[in-house]
Length: 104
Image (cartoon, rainbow, N blue to C red; front, side, top):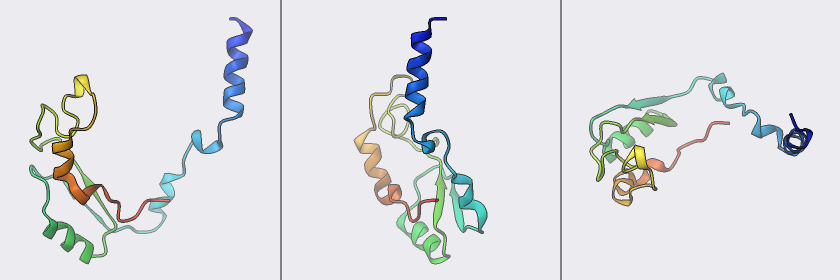
């Protein structure tokens, strides 16, 4: 194996910050968390999120694989030929993309 590619890789790794190698996301679960799962066939309405926030929940896990989008796959158009987010689908999500609290 040529030495130059190995040296390039070693130099690249030496200058990468430690966070690039791992992130301590598991510490989010060190204390009890309140949240919910949103695995509905349609996007949840504002009343759902208001009621959830009133419980003290700080996160919600959503799955949109069942949601009908503009293209074949909701939000990404066509998973086999991704070219960017679909603006019409993104508009359906509205404030869903605003985190209530980020872990860590």
